[in-house]
Length: 490
Image 1 (cartoon, rainbow, N blue to C red):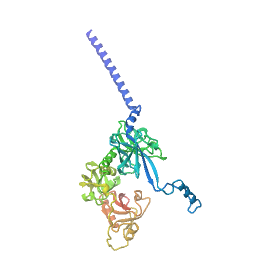
Image 2 (image 1 turned 135 degrees about the vertical axis):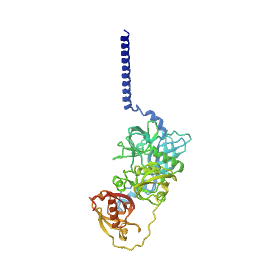
Image 3 (image 1 turned 180 degrees about the vertical axis):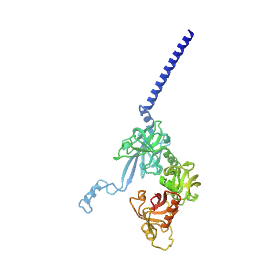
Image 4 (image 1 turned 120 degrees about the vertical axis):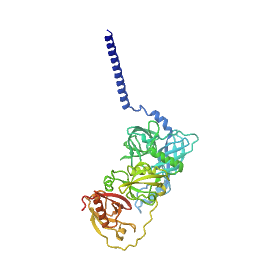
């Protein structure tokens, strides 16, 4: 009897356990469904809390004349009529004031305001309108055209409501975002959407855009892109549109780029970016093979003008593999890392050269100070002019450089190399961008001044088992590397 009772109790216990396991499983399934479909019921609370920190910006600029006039042929009998009409209406050729609209947001209680540079560029007067309707004049603290960011300052009698920057690197594709601003001059407006893509590059050197489908229109420029915590993760800057209106493809400069710029503008009134002093291009698969690199990564140095890199021993043809302890994936990544580095900082740079790596120490300069410096022109070497040698190599009709060709191609007197006179439009060289007028200055990472030099470099590459050879090509002074196959070369 006791054995039967124990068996019954165990059965009840097992049934009880199974029941609760089932309840727990159902609860977890419900939570997963709710989580998968989680969405804010309303953005009203968020909009209400952050709206006071978002501002409308009105700029005015004095232009030289009153804008376009009717097209009247010179000497026409209507010419005097239209001139008198314009004068009667106060137009004439007198300066006129034009206005433009944009958006911005307050980042400190003492009145610092962030917006786009293109919103306030060339403005004579900047008026900030707050959510309350109050208007204040603003002064420009500093601008950065490269990231299209400007920092303004207003003087208010009381502390201003402000918002903080968030970490844009934590924003994920699919996250909810809210854009605020002054679209098409309609006043304060809120739109919501999701992060559509990350790390978009448009045309700038330091571009790192968040793409969103939240409605962004003209007038939204300079306004904030918020996450659901009310933090600014981007500055609305541009849209992609065939008609000038929002089609759901908008771009906001990532906050992690903006904060660095704003900090420098606030401290110095200008940006101070690190400068390495090299010209670079991406490493392609064929370039990697031509120089014996295991994989296509890093930044290939095409030129080393006078500067920090030159002083440290960086050479044309080096591949920068690591910068300040961080692997270099491509040229864009290197440019951003260098630009974000402190001016005057000494960094370790690992380069790939002649089949092995070397570590160099480079003290960074300041990019802004280096930009716009002109290179010195070379002096006349006084060499006696001789008829240039011509030959077809690698499906290109090449000619050794002489005075006439230097003059025709507007090259410096000390320029050396082989001129591409013509090439087959179906050739590999043409497909990879080579054109008549290009100047080949290196082959196999060695200088070439004659056809024989090039043929020697080709023979050396073949003897080393290379399937391609790396050429340094200059066009209009701009250098780049091109890897051409040797398999079909006789």
